Length: 412
Image 1 (cartoon, rainbow, N blue to C red):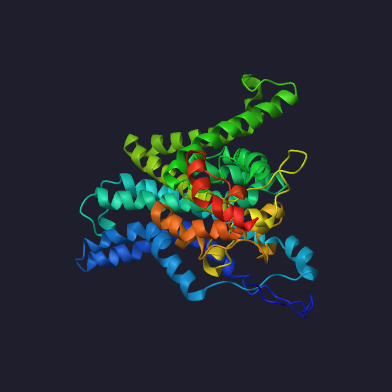
Image 2: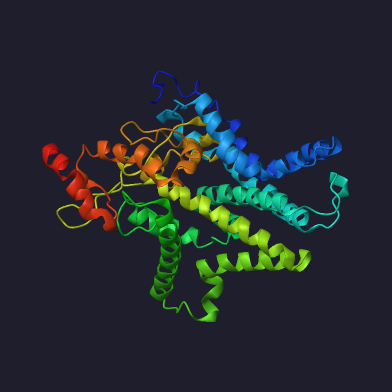
């Protein structure tokens, strides 16, 4: 539900979340915030408890954010039309995303040091970290990498060349630089269709979706960029085109980053790099899975898909996770207006809504029976029980049509 604010003039309206957007910096600064707690627990002799703060990323993602979403609930505020241009051009909001990068890479580098250090006596440890702490550390850095992909998503949609390059730099941590191409020129074109690897199908488990989306998005990004180069009379395999190949130059940033980190901290850092990267891009794919689950754009009489509308994305207006993810959960408006900056995105009446914020839903995706119990009936309700209008998993198509076909006939 959105709050009616049409009676508020442009001069009177103020963004009550203006300074709360700095919550986006929680993920890239959490590791540093935890260090005094680690030291204090070790100083008290609670050495086992001192390992827990290294798991701050998963704790934040799976415990704290869902609890805060439950407590504070939906936002309820949309900016009025009269302030949209002023709000869009207020550079403060883009600086909130720019500042993510220095904290992101400070945490990645400091995490690499902690992972490989053999003497952490200044933190109260005898020697270096054990594997329980190392795994928690890598996963926590992976969380900031996953949130970083969302920050890159915000900047990558913009026309400003600086923001586009910052987007690629942000993606380098997780090795997902091709997302810059696939998301903007692939996903936004094919969203909510069977052809889109990043749109989950009704009845498809997250564990089936994950490899399909990872491989499909990678392959699609290369095909899209190769076609662009060929249209310009260049071969994607010509080494002279590599600096201008947006897939290869994005991947090159990851190779450079990982190469420098391994050169500085040694090959013992490799498990850290792999764990954080895989966990980071898996978080992205988890969000991809829940954003369009079962939703389908219908074909028109011409055989083409209808224009993407708010009805083709799952929406959530829970304020805490929206602050954490720069309004990503107002996904229906994002797909309707891809270049609109996060501070101006609206929660749209009539869009299908998730029962809670992304942070709560992410953990649910890991358990297919629970996920389907919560979401399948919502998909069917969205289409008035007509299963023929749903983006069905091919493996389950006959079974689903047989199961729900009678309902579809009645609805017609």
